[in-house]
Length: 145
Image 1 (cartoon, rainbow, N blue to C red):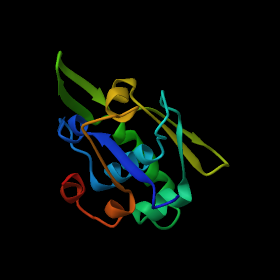
Image 2 (cartoon, rainbow, N blue to C red; image 1 turned 180 degrees about the horizontal axis):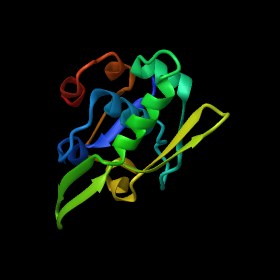
Image 3 (cartoon, rainbow, N blue to C red; image 1 turned 120 degrees about the vertical axis):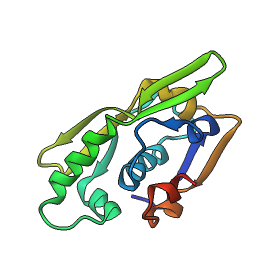
Image 4 (cartoon, rainbow, N blue to C red; image 1 turned 90 degrees about the vertical axis):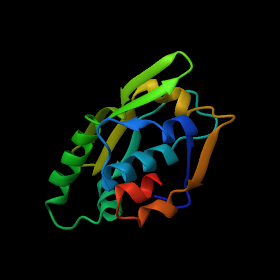
């Protein structure tokens, strides 16, 4: 994984209220996925993160890392956002689905389709930064700031 990847999100998404806040580990996974979105993407893909890179990113060691990763990925599907918009509001989860491919050492995650206007084809009112700027942070609050 290239730590020079750029994370770009709509300001509305950054300012959204998290009904169930993401932990620092969960935020790092989501932001890694966001950094994999290309400027010209018109739809989400399945974003693949190798278990090895995932473990290094989260500071996991030993054989228990597979169970930890499974737990973190499952928790991502339970995290709900409340995003006000011009028509009212949107509530959605970050992750629509996940897939672990046994033998490949890869976990594949996909964003909720409701996040498209906040992550794809952004032309104005967005924020960008290097993924490496947040990977060393240990607190979920410091990452959000």
